[in-house]
Amino acid sequence: MNDDMRLVFESRNRRACSDRALVLASLQIPYEIVDDATSCALIVPAAYSARAMDQLMRYDDENPPYVPPRQVSIEYQNALPGVLAYVIVICAVAGLASRSMFAQDWFAAGRVDGVLIRAGEWWRTVTALTLHSGLRHLVGNVVFGALFGLFAGRLLGPGVAWLAIVVAAAAGNTLNMLLLEASHRSVGASTAVFAALGLVAGFVWRGKLMSQDRWPYRVGPIVGGFALLMYTGTGGPNTDIGAHLMGFLGGLAAGILLSPIREKLARPNWQRNAGTLAGLVVAGAWALAFLT
Image 1 (spheres, rainbow, N blue to C red):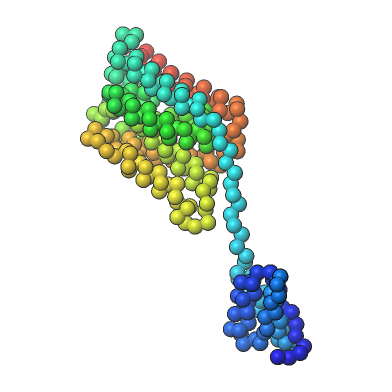
Image 2 (image 1 turned 45 degrees about the vertical axis):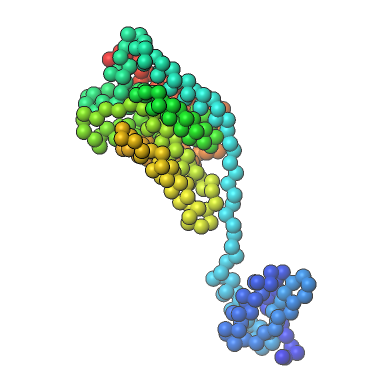
């Protein structure tokens, strides 16, 4: 090879050097690889150096170096207060309703009733979330609600998570009622349970809290949420699949909307105010149910 050789590329990455050697070979530019213990270099005859440099610059422009996605830091919060509040409210209402406390028929006053909701009794979309048809129904919703609520509270904080769950579940009950016949009636926290699941899926997906470099990871939270919905929310002859699906979709939308402000969610006043508002929504709905 010509004694007058010029350096056109040098790197500690031998793969990078080999890739560029293939570029020169494809253009029939003579080259030589100089490899030592620390780096690899490409040299070409002086007469070819200008063309080689130009072609390697074009190669670099067309093949920018891979930059791994920035890892998103997750600040987990204490979800226990929200979960405890959920369990206490659900169990307390179950006990009060079973004894017809305050001389009230809690089921007649608070269940989802398509006719009455269409007539303006919107609070039933909230009160129905705290009623259950029996012990098995109650225990199932306590267990799964506490589990999914724990995940949601860890990510969004106990106050914001449960306010979002209540609003999303009420919206899910409303949508489900509008899609069914006016005679539709239902009770149960399962709409809220799956709203919590959707909330987690939407928040994780929109916030890119999982690895996002390949498409399976990008859609993983959504697919996983739907898989859990299908596995846990479609069994049993009395299962209100529509309410589960609408609750999940409501939670999914809430998670997507809240994700851009996730850095603000850790503020104690946000959590305190949101948690208080969630409690007031439920208490206010029951007050309207009894006063109407």
